[in-house]
Image: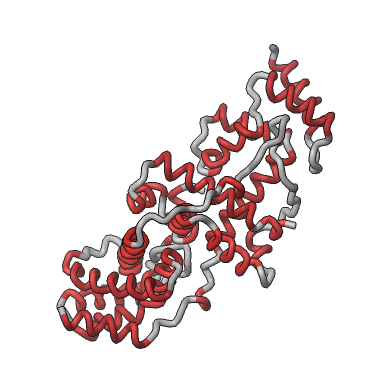
Length: 119
Length: 220
Protein backbone atom coordinates (compact mmCIF):
# COMPACT_ATOMS: atom_id res chain seq x y z
CA UNK A 1 0.00 0.00 0.00
CA UNK A 2 1.41 3.37 -0.95
CA UNK A 3 2.18 5.87 1.77
CA UNK A 4 -0.25 8.34 0.22
CA UNK A 5 -3.13 5.86 0.22
CA UNK A 6 -2.33 4.86 3.79
CA UNK A 7 -2.38 8.52 4.85
CA UNK A 8 -5.70 9.07 3.11
CA UNK A 9 -7.28 6.02 4.76
CA UNK A 10 -5.99 7.07 8.13
CA UNK A 11 -7.35 10.59 7.68
CA UNK A 12 -10.78 9.18 6.78
CA UNK A 13 -10.74 6.88 9.77
CA UNK A 14 -9.58 9.60 12.12
CA UNK A 15 -12.60 11.64 11.03
CA UNK A 16 -14.87 8.64 11.32
CA UNK A 17 -13.90 7.21 14.69
CA UNK A 18 -11.86 9.84 16.50
CA UNK A 19 -14.20 11.85 18.70
CA UNK A 20 -14.27 12.82 22.32
CA UNK A 21 -17.34 10.72 22.93
CA UNK A 22 -17.56 6.94 23.29
CA UNK A 23 -17.91 5.28 19.87
CA UNK A 24 -21.36 4.07 18.82
CA UNK A 25 -22.01 0.57 17.43
CA UNK A 26 -21.23 1.54 13.81
CA UNK A 27 -18.03 3.33 14.76
CA UNK A 28 -17.04 0.32 16.85
CA UNK A 29 -17.73 -2.11 14.03
CA UNK A 30 -15.76 -0.05 11.50
CA UNK A 31 -13.03 0.75 14.02
CA UNK A 32 -12.56 -2.84 15.13
CA UNK A 33 -12.20 -4.06 11.53
CA UNK A 34 -9.79 -1.26 10.78
CA UNK A 35 -7.69 -2.01 13.84
CA UNK A 36 -7.71 -5.74 13.06
CA UNK A 37 -6.95 -5.60 9.33
CA UNK A 38 -5.11 -2.37 8.65
CA UNK A 39 -1.33 -2.90 8.82
CA UNK A 40 0.52 -1.25 11.69
CA UNK A 41 -2.51 -0.77 13.93
CA UNK A 42 -2.99 -1.65 17.58
CA UNK A 43 -6.14 -2.91 19.23
CA UNK A 44 -7.09 -1.26 22.54
CA UNK A 45 -5.82 -4.36 24.30
CA UNK A 46 -2.43 -4.09 22.59
CA UNK A 47 -2.40 -0.36 23.27
CA UNK A 48 -2.80 -1.16 26.97
CA UNK A 49 0.28 -3.41 26.82
CA UNK A 50 2.34 -0.47 25.53
CA UNK A 51 1.10 2.22 27.94
CA UNK A 52 3.80 1.66 30.56
CA UNK A 53 6.66 1.60 28.06
CA UNK A 54 5.36 4.64 26.18
CA UNK A 55 5.19 6.58 29.42
CA UNK A 56 8.69 5.44 30.34
CA UNK A 57 9.88 6.34 26.83
CA UNK A 58 11.02 2.78 26.21
CA UNK A 59 9.35 2.32 22.79
CA UNK A 60 11.14 2.32 19.45
CA UNK A 61 10.25 5.25 17.15
CA UNK A 62 8.05 2.93 15.05
CA UNK A 63 6.20 1.59 18.11
CA UNK A 64 5.79 5.14 19.36
CA UNK A 65 4.22 6.26 16.08
CA UNK A 66 1.81 3.31 16.11
CA UNK A 67 0.90 4.01 19.73
CA UNK A 68 0.25 7.68 19.01
CA UNK A 69 -1.86 6.91 15.96
CA UNK A 70 -4.08 4.63 18.04
CA UNK A 71 -4.38 7.40 20.61
CA UNK A 72 -5.58 9.77 17.86
CA UNK A 73 -8.11 7.24 16.64
CA UNK A 74 -9.51 5.99 19.92
CA UNK A 75 -11.15 8.44 22.34
CA UNK A 76 -11.34 5.81 25.08
CA UNK A 77 -7.61 5.08 25.00
CA UNK A 78 -6.78 8.77 24.61
CA UNK A 79 -8.69 9.60 27.77
CA UNK A 80 -7.40 6.48 29.53
CA UNK A 81 -3.81 7.50 28.86
CA UNK A 82 -4.38 11.10 29.93
CA UNK A 83 -5.93 9.95 33.22
CA UNK A 84 -3.13 7.38 33.68
CA UNK A 85 -0.46 10.10 33.45
CA UNK A 86 -2.40 12.44 35.73
CA UNK A 87 -2.79 9.60 38.24
CA UNK A 88 0.99 9.10 38.34
CA UNK A 89 1.48 12.83 38.88
CA UNK A 90 -1.15 12.85 41.63
CA UNK A 91 0.64 9.95 43.33
CA UNK A 92 3.95 11.77 43.11
CA UNK A 93 2.51 14.94 44.60
CA UNK A 94 0.07 13.58 47.14
CA UNK A 95 2.70 13.42 49.87
CA UNK A 96 4.69 16.53 49.00
CA UNK A 97 2.99 18.74 51.53
CA UNK A 98 5.64 19.56 54.13
CA UNK A 99 2.96 20.66 56.62
CA UNK A 100 1.64 17.13 56.67
CA UNK A 101 4.82 15.49 57.95
CA UNK A 102 3.98 13.73 61.21
CA UNK A 103 5.31 14.98 64.51
CA UNK A 104 8.12 12.88 65.89
CA UNK A 105 6.71 11.60 69.21
CA UNK A 106 9.01 12.49 72.10
CA UNK A 107 8.73 8.98 73.51
CA UNK A 108 10.00 7.58 70.22
CA UNK A 109 12.99 9.96 70.29
CA UNK A 110 13.76 8.88 73.84
CA UNK A 111 13.31 5.19 72.99
CA UNK A 112 15.80 5.52 70.13
CA UNK A 113 18.32 7.38 72.28
CA UNK A 114 17.97 4.79 75.08
CA UNK A 115 18.34 1.88 72.66
CA UNK A 116 21.51 3.44 71.25
CA UNK A 117 22.96 3.91 74.75
CA UNK A 118 22.18 0.30 75.60
CA UNK A 119 24.35 -0.94 72.71
CA UNK B 1 8.77 10.00 33.19
CA UNK B 2 12.37 9.00 32.90
CA UNK B 3 14.41 7.62 35.77
CA UNK B 4 16.60 10.72 35.62
CA UNK B 5 13.60 12.87 36.36
CA UNK B 6 12.74 10.63 39.26
CA UNK B 7 16.24 11.03 40.62
CA UNK B 8 16.03 14.80 40.37
CA UNK B 9 12.65 14.81 42.06
CA UNK B 10 13.82 12.65 44.88
CA UNK B 11 16.47 15.13 45.91
CA UNK B 12 16.77 14.51 49.59
CA UNK B 13 15.51 10.99 49.44
CA UNK B 14 11.98 11.04 48.07
CA UNK B 15 9.34 12.78 46.08
CA UNK B 16 7.81 13.72 49.43
CA UNK B 17 9.16 17.06 50.71
CA UNK B 18 12.65 16.25 51.84
CA UNK B 19 13.97 17.35 55.20
CA UNK B 20 15.78 20.70 54.86
CA UNK B 21 19.16 19.23 55.67
CA UNK B 22 18.79 16.67 52.91
CA UNK B 23 18.54 19.26 50.12
CA UNK B 24 21.78 19.89 48.32
CA UNK B 25 21.76 23.46 46.98
CA UNK B 26 22.00 25.45 50.24
CA UNK B 27 25.73 25.60 51.15
CA UNK B 28 24.95 26.78 54.67
CA UNK B 29 22.85 23.71 55.32
CA UNK B 30 25.32 21.45 53.53
CA UNK B 31 28.06 22.65 55.87
CA UNK B 32 25.70 21.94 58.75
CA UNK B 33 25.25 18.45 57.47
CA UNK B 34 28.96 17.75 57.04
CA UNK B 35 29.59 18.97 60.58
CA UNK B 36 26.80 16.73 61.80
CA UNK B 37 28.32 13.75 59.99
CA UNK B 38 31.74 14.47 61.51
CA UNK B 39 30.19 14.70 64.98
CA UNK B 40 28.29 11.45 64.43
CA UNK B 41 31.43 9.69 63.25
CA UNK B 42 33.23 11.02 66.34
CA UNK B 43 30.51 9.37 68.46
CA UNK B 44 28.99 12.54 69.94
CA UNK B 45 25.69 11.67 71.64
CA UNK B 46 24.20 15.11 71.00
CA UNK B 47 24.82 14.70 67.27
CA UNK B 48 22.83 11.47 67.23
CA UNK B 49 19.95 13.19 69.00
CA UNK B 50 20.09 16.02 66.45
CA UNK B 51 20.00 13.45 63.65
CA UNK B 52 16.93 11.78 65.15
CA UNK B 53 15.07 15.03 65.67
CA UNK B 54 15.99 16.44 62.26
CA UNK B 55 15.19 13.39 60.14
CA UNK B 56 12.72 11.55 62.36
CA UNK B 57 9.48 13.07 60.99
CA UNK B 58 10.39 12.33 57.39
CA UNK B 59 11.47 8.78 58.18
CA UNK B 60 8.29 8.21 60.14
CA UNK B 61 6.23 9.36 57.14
CA UNK B 62 8.13 7.02 54.82
CA UNK B 63 7.70 4.05 57.17
CA UNK B 64 3.99 4.77 57.68
CA UNK B 65 3.49 4.91 53.92
CA UNK B 66 4.98 1.45 53.53
CA UNK B 67 3.78 -0.48 56.60
CA UNK B 68 0.50 1.45 57.18
CA UNK B 69 0.58 0.87 60.90
CA UNK B 70 1.77 3.39 63.49
CA UNK B 71 3.36 0.90 65.86
CA UNK B 72 5.22 -0.93 63.09
CA UNK B 73 6.30 2.39 61.59
CA UNK B 74 7.83 3.47 64.91
CA UNK B 75 9.68 0.15 65.16
CA UNK B 76 11.03 0.67 61.64
CA UNK B 77 12.21 4.20 62.41
CA UNK B 78 13.93 3.03 65.58
CA UNK B 79 15.59 0.16 63.72
CA UNK B 80 16.65 2.54 60.94
CA UNK B 81 18.30 5.02 63.29
CA UNK B 82 20.11 2.25 65.17
CA UNK B 83 21.26 0.76 61.89
CA UNK B 84 22.46 4.20 60.76
CA UNK B 85 24.31 4.62 64.06
CA UNK B 86 26.07 1.29 63.59
CA UNK B 87 27.17 2.13 60.06
CA UNK B 88 27.82 5.88 60.22
CA UNK B 89 31.58 5.23 60.09
CA UNK B 90 31.08 3.90 56.55
CA UNK B 91 29.00 6.91 55.41
CA UNK B 92 31.08 8.59 52.70
CA UNK B 93 28.76 11.47 51.85
CA UNK B 94 28.19 10.43 48.23
CA UNK B 95 24.46 10.91 48.89
CA UNK B 96 22.95 13.28 51.43
CA UNK B 97 22.22 12.01 54.92
CA UNK B 98 18.51 12.27 54.10
CA UNK B 99 18.85 10.00 51.06
CA UNK B 100 20.96 7.52 53.01
CA UNK B 101 18.50 7.39 55.90
CA UNK B 102 15.59 7.18 53.49
CA UNK B 103 17.02 4.02 51.96
CA UNK B 104 17.69 2.51 55.40
CA UNK B 105 14.15 3.12 56.67
CA UNK B 106 12.70 1.80 53.40
CA UNK B 107 14.65 -1.43 53.85
CA UNK B 108 13.57 -1.67 57.50
CA UNK B 109 9.93 -1.16 56.49
CA UNK B 110 10.09 -3.79 53.75
CA UNK B 111 11.69 -6.20 56.24
CA UNK B 112 8.81 -5.51 58.60
CA UNK B 113 6.27 -6.28 55.88
CA UNK B 114 8.11 -9.52 55.05
CA UNK B 115 8.24 -10.50 58.73
CA UNK B 116 4.43 -10.50 58.77
CA UNK B 117 4.53 -13.27 56.19
CA UNK B 118 2.78 -13.47 52.87
CA UNK B 119 -0.94 -12.86 53.32
CA UNK B 120 -3.51 -13.95 50.76
CA UNK B 121 -4.07 -10.97 48.51
CA UNK B 122 -7.31 -9.71 47.01
CA UNK B 123 -7.23 -9.94 43.21
CA UNK B 124 -6.50 -6.67 41.44
CA UNK B 125 -8.26 -7.83 38.25
CA UNK B 126 -11.60 -6.06 38.86
CA UNK B 127 -9.70 -2.76 39.07
CA UNK B 128 -7.87 -3.18 35.76
CA UNK B 129 -8.88 -2.19 32.22
CA UNK B 130 -11.55 -4.30 30.50
CA UNK B 131 -12.36 -4.70 26.83
CA UNK B 132 -15.65 -5.28 25.03
CA UNK B 133 -16.47 -7.80 22.28
CA UNK B 134 -14.95 -5.50 19.64
CA UNK B 135 -11.71 -5.20 21.60
CA UNK B 136 -12.47 -1.60 22.62
CA UNK B 137 -11.58 -0.34 26.04
CA UNK B 138 -14.63 -0.43 28.28
CA UNK B 139 -15.61 1.98 31.00
CA UNK B 140 -16.73 5.57 31.38
CA UNK B 141 -14.78 8.32 29.70
CA UNK B 142 -13.66 10.91 32.20
CA UNK B 143 -13.07 13.86 29.95
CA UNK B 144 -11.68 16.24 32.55
CA UNK B 145 -8.36 17.47 31.22
CA UNK B 146 -7.34 19.28 34.42
CA UNK B 147 -3.71 18.89 35.44
CA UNK B 148 -2.66 17.14 38.65
CA UNK B 149 -1.90 20.54 40.14
CA UNK B 150 -5.40 21.81 39.37
CA UNK B 151 -6.98 18.65 40.75
CA UNK B 152 -4.96 18.97 43.96
CA UNK B 153 -6.48 22.41 44.55
CA UNK B 154 -9.73 20.63 45.39
CA UNK B 155 -10.10 19.94 49.06
CA UNK B 156 -10.82 16.24 48.82
CA UNK B 157 -8.43 15.12 46.08
CA UNK B 158 -5.44 14.42 48.32
CA UNK B 159 -7.57 12.45 50.77
CA UNK B 160 -9.23 10.50 47.97
CA UNK B 161 -5.93 9.55 46.32
CA UNK B 162 -4.40 8.45 49.62
CA UNK B 163 -7.51 6.43 50.45
CA UNK B 164 -7.38 4.76 47.04
CA UNK B 165 -3.69 3.90 47.42
CA UNK B 166 -4.54 2.21 50.73
CA UNK B 167 -7.19 0.12 48.95
CA UNK B 168 -4.66 -1.45 46.58
CA UNK B 169 -3.58 -5.04 47.31
CA UNK B 170 -0.37 -4.92 49.34
CA UNK B 171 2.20 -5.90 46.70
CA UNK B 172 0.75 -3.34 44.28
CA UNK B 173 0.49 -0.63 46.92
CA UNK B 174 4.10 -1.22 47.97
CA UNK B 175 5.56 -0.86 44.47
CA UNK B 176 3.46 2.22 43.75
CA UNK B 177 4.55 3.86 47.00
CA UNK B 178 8.22 3.10 46.34
CA UNK B 179 8.26 4.26 42.73
CA UNK B 180 5.69 7.03 42.43
CA UNK B 181 5.58 8.46 45.95
CA UNK B 182 9.04 7.85 47.34
CA UNK B 183 10.63 8.34 43.93
CA UNK B 184 12.88 5.29 43.68
CA UNK B 185 14.02 4.39 40.17
CA UNK B 186 12.93 1.12 38.56
CA UNK B 187 16.38 -0.38 39.21
CA UNK B 188 16.18 0.56 42.88
CA UNK B 189 12.67 -0.88 43.18
CA UNK B 190 13.83 -4.14 41.58
CA UNK B 191 16.64 -4.35 44.13
CA UNK B 192 14.52 -3.35 47.13
CA UNK B 193 11.69 -5.77 46.34
CA UNK B 194 13.96 -8.53 45.05
CA UNK B 195 11.85 -9.06 41.93
CA UNK B 196 12.68 -9.14 38.22
CA UNK B 197 12.50 -6.01 36.08
CA UNK B 198 9.65 -7.55 34.09
CA UNK B 199 7.65 -8.32 37.23
CA UNK B 200 8.24 -4.78 38.49
CA UNK B 201 6.98 -3.32 35.20
CA UNK B 202 3.80 -5.41 35.15
CA UNK B 203 3.06 -4.85 38.83
CA UNK B 204 3.62 -1.10 38.66
CA UNK B 205 1.50 -0.69 35.54
CA UNK B 206 -1.36 -2.64 37.12
CA UNK B 207 -1.05 -0.63 40.33
CA UNK B 208 -1.22 2.67 38.41
CA UNK B 209 -4.16 1.50 36.30
CA UNK B 210 -6.05 0.28 39.37
CA UNK B 211 -5.38 3.56 41.16
CA UNK B 212 -6.58 5.50 38.11
CA UNK B 213 -9.84 3.51 38.09
CA UNK B 214 -10.29 3.84 41.87
CA UNK B 215 -10.05 7.63 41.73
CA UNK B 216 -12.19 7.90 38.58
CA UNK B 217 -14.51 10.46 40.14
CA UNK B 218 -11.56 12.87 40.51
CA UNK B 219 -11.53 13.20 36.73
CA UNK B 220 -15.26 13.94 36.37
